[in-house]
Image 1 (cartoon, rainbow, N blue to C red):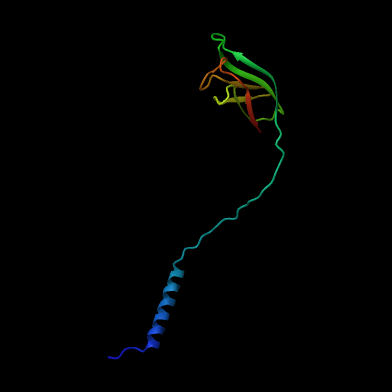
Image 2: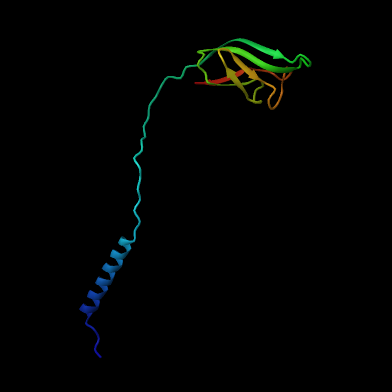
Length: 123
C-alpha cells in the first residue's frame, strides 16, 4: 500500500479544518440585546426652609420626645426624615402641609442626648 502524497494529506487537513470551523460557527448562539438609553444631565438642587420647630414631650415622662413638628418650604416634600441625635436614629415623617415626625418608633427619642435637628427631604 502506498502512502498518500504530501499534497493530498495537506488538502485533506485543510478541508477538515474548514469543516470544523464551519461546524463551530453553525452552533454559535446569537444574543438579542434591547435598545437602551444612556445620558448625562444636570439640574439645580435647592434646599428647604424649616421653621416653627416644636419638640412635643410625652405627658407622662417629659424626658421622652414623642413627636417633632415643623413647617417646610417648599411644601412639596414627599419624603421627610429627621435625626435628633448626631449619628442616631432616623425617624420618618408625614407631610400634610405641616410635617410631623413620630420619634417613638424604634429607639425612643429623649431630651438629654438630643443635640441637633437634621432634616432630609426630597420630592
